[in-house]
Image 1 (cartoon, rainbow over the protein chains, first blue to last red):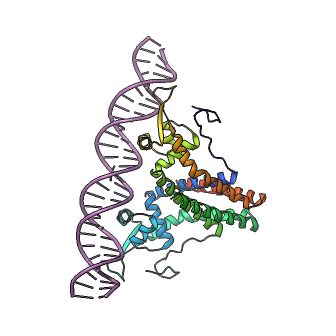
Image 2: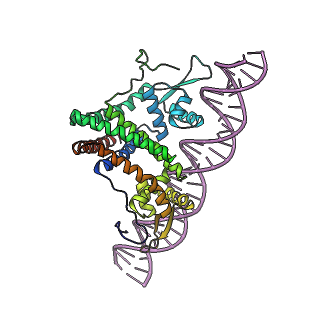
Image 3: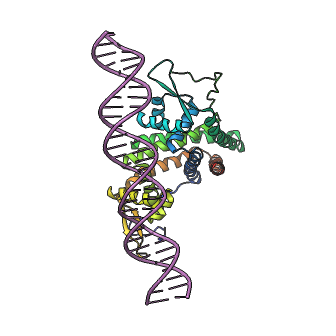
Length: 160
Length: 160
DNA sequence: GTCTGATAGTTCGATAATCTAACTAAATCC
DNA sequence: GGATTTAGTTAGATTATCGAACTATCAGAC
């Protein structure tokens, strides 16, 4: 195993370091991935299909094309994702009553409840963490997170 | 388009709502995805390969198996990921001098610099956001994020 | 020393998820 | 009411992944 140190010569790693909060933020992002993977596994779906489920749960019934837009996926890929979810009973298609070309996809109550049973305690627990802080601190935390979103957005734009 | 409202009958969405900070946290997680996608596009690699690059940049040279472990991928898939990155000149393989079975994968200086050129301003800007807050507030933010990591971990475990 | 089992990495064949393009049906627009 | 657009699906190709088989090397038993 090669040492990680500030050695010379070849241009060694020298990872960017930052303050504890910034490093914790990185950790939050990493661990949310783990949570999603665990949740996907628990529902026997892949990451894409879990994402679709979450949109259907949060936004309510959606057309395939609206879902495709939210997922950043082609409508073709979305069709197959809905097929997979439907085969597992997680969603069902119904005809759009006002447009006979259209379809409405809706999360099935049971799967919705199962997903909520995992999500809600999570969200609740995260929200409850705030109670450990004073109102002023909560305000700071909230502002900080909003600023982080802004910074991420501007840098994502810069790169694209 | 169907209305999203608190209507009756079928068991409508009723998305879980939470305080602003909690919602902003969700937004942070979403937007980091966008950033990663933009960065991957800019380097002409897929999400997996960007992840590999980041590990090689942060940790320094790694064996394929160590990289596989970090990526949560089979060694077979990691071999092909390294192949893809090598074909683009983003990494190179060298023989492990102490184990003739072994290989060491290292990010190429140019690609490393390119990735750092995107990451460092980002990380720097995120870190600088902290300067908008008092030391006490920074402390609160840091504690909050650590607590969030703990909560996520415990809930991910619960689900698995 | 050499045989045995473990380890590092790659290759192979199969599977899964995605894309673009083509297609069908229905809506909208003069 | 015919032309164009839109919604969704289907078809074929591509890409990423996996498990299993394989090669080479190492480490330990004796």
